[in-house]
Image 1 (cartoon, rainbow over the protein chains, first blue to last red):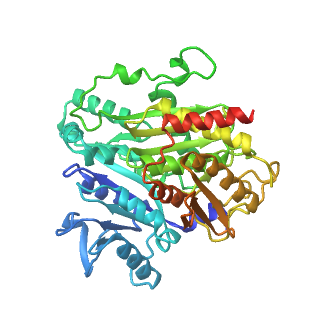
Image 2 (cartoon, each protein chain N blue to C red):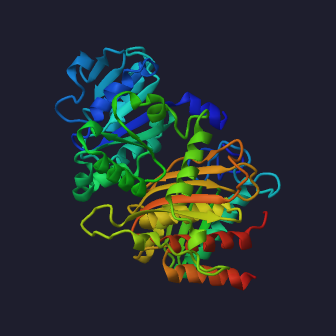
Image 3 (cartoon, rainbow over the protein chains, first blue to last red):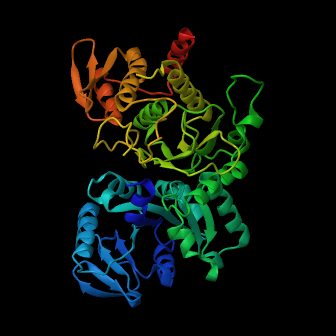
Length: 369
Length: 111
C-alpha cells in the first residue's frame, strides 16, 4: 500500500484544545454546522457534564451522543485508548454511522500531547486513525493573561497547527493585535485566524492538513512562508563567513519577562545547504528528543535527504515523531533542508552545531555494505 | 514499507517508510542489512565516548553493551538512549559541547 493510499484509508482525528472558557465548544459547533463535516464524530475529554450545548446533541446510548447534524458525540468515560477502539468497533459493526472524521475536544487544563501519543503509538488505533490538525482556541480577552500564568495554555498554543483567536468582538483591536503578535512569535508556523462571524473556514481548520495528500504540499508551503516572514534569518545574523555559528539577535531584541510562561520558549529555523544523511538525522533526532523531549515542543522540517530526489517532511510534537512523509516534488527551486523548532531554553547555535556534527559523521562513515 | 527498513514489521519512524527511495535506494545502493549496520556504526561513534557499544542482533533488535560486560537488548533506535543512560547512570545529550566536540574531532580525524 502506498503512502497516499494509507493516508486516505485512515480516519483523520482533529484535536481541539484551548484554555478553559476560550470558546472550544462554540467553535466546534460552528465548524460542524458545515455540511461538509456532517459525518464527524466528536469525543469530549471532559469528566462530568458534556461540554457541547444540549441543543446540538441528543442522547443515543450510554457514552454515545448523536448530534442533530448527524455527528456522533462520545464522552471519554475511561481512557482514550478504550474510547477510540470502542468507537471504531461500533462503527465497523454498523452500530453508529460511518463517520469520516473524529474531533477530540480536550478539557481546558489538558495537555494535548498524551492524546497525540495515543494516536501515534497505539498499534490498533494507528492502523485506523491518523492525526489531523491540532486546533487551539485562544480567548482575545483573557488569552494573554492565561499565557502569562498558565503553562498549559502556552503548551496548547505552541503545539497547535491552527490557532483561532476567539471573542474578538469583546476585545479592543490593539489587544487582539498584541495577542496575535505574541502567538506568532510562539508558534510562527501555525495558521492564525480569528473566530469572528463568517470568517471561520472549517476546511482550513479541520481538513487541510499535512497528511491529506491533496493539501500536504500547501501545508509545507505555509511553514516555509512562515519561516521566511516570521523567523529571523540566521544567514543575515551570521558574523563572518565559513563555519561560524549563527547568532540570534531576536532573543535580545525582545523584552525578557521571567514571569511569562512563554518567555523562555523560542521558535527558530535552521537551514542546511548540503543534503542530510537520513540515518544520521534519525539518530540525532531520537537522541535529542530523549534528552530534551520535554523542551522541544514542536519540530517541523522539509529535508533534502542524500540520494533521495523528493523532499522528506518530518514532524514531531515533543518526543512524538510522526511517520515521515514524501512530497511528490520540491515546492520551489530552493533545495535546502529547513527545520523549524519551537523549544524551551535551547539555543539555535547548539542545535545547529550538533546536527552538523552528526551529519558530517554520516558523510564519513557511509560506505555501501 | 520501504525495502531498506531494518526488518519487516518494524514501525519505528526512522525505520519504516512507504517510499522505496526513502533511504536513498538506487544511487547509494544501500540494502536493508547495510542500512542497519550503517546505523550501528554511527551510533557506536556516539556511544564510544560513553564506554558503550551497540551491536545488531539478528536484524531484529539491538544490544547495548558496557565495557564491564553488562548487556541489554532493545527493540529500536529510540530505546537505545534510555537504556544507555540507565547503564552509565547519566544523561546522553547530543547538545553537550563535549559530545559535539568529540564527534567533530572524529570527523576531522577521518579526513
